[in-house]
Structures are given as structure tokens and as C-alpha cells.
Length: 113
Ligand SMILES: Nc1ncnc2c1ncn2[C@@H]1O[C@H](COP(=O)(O)OP(=O)(O)O)[C@@H](O)[C@H]1O
Ligand SMILES: [Mg+2]
Image (cartoon, rainbow, N blue to C red; front, side, top):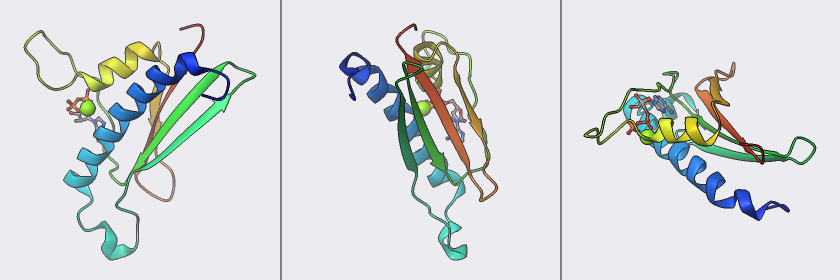
């Protein structure tokens, strides 16, 4: 990927977890969003910062609800996605709420992690 094929698998995994959460949040919170003209569809962005040796994945969804890192035990069937993102990004993930609504969850991965 843009000169960093070694990051492809990790970037795909991170994007897939964030998108899966965005789809769930959309189904839960945004059923009536189309009525006021917003996008009910998650939006994915992938940015490469060669000068920092980092790849940033961002996923917007229409729910204002923040992502929550939950404690998981061996028997938990859910709550593993964000933990995985947390590990793969070395804790460099978070979210922000754009003024236009919803939120963007982002995670950054890079060579040194
Ligand atoms: N995009 C999101 N919007 C709202 N809540 C989110 C989002 N992503 C994660 N969450 C919250 O954080 C929790 C943990 O996410 P995750 O570890 O991926 O577990 P899971 O998807 O299996 O529930 C979710 O159960 C949900 O409550
Ligand atoms: Mg998940």
C-alpha cells in the first residue's frame, strides 16, 4: 500500500473493525437520519503520511455515541474489536465529533508499532 505493503494486513484489519462498528452504530441510532438529509452510510478514509511513516484510518458514522473500550475475558464474544484496534495502533486511536454531526473514529498504525 503506497510503498508500505507490510502495513496492508494491519490496515485492513483496523478498517474492518471500525467499519463493522460503524455499521452497527448506524443501525442502532440513525434509522431516521435520511429524513433530515444526512448520510446514513458510514464513510471511510485512509490517509498515508510518508513523512511520519504512518497510516491513518478514519470512519465516520451518524451516531454521536462514542466508541467504548470494554474489558473482555476469555468467554466474551463481543468487545474484542476495539481492543484489537487499541493493540494494533499502540493506543493511538480516538474519536471526534464534527460540527456536521455524527462522529469520526480514527486509528493510526505505523512502522514503529
Ligand atoms: N462507531 C461506534 N459508534 C457507537 N458505539 C461504538 C462504536 N464503535 C464501538 N462502539 C461501542 O464500543 C463497544 C466496543 O466495541 P467493540 O470492541 O468493537 O465490540 P463489539 O463490536 O463486539 O460490540 C461497542 O459494543 C459499542 O458499544
Ligand atoms: Mg466491534
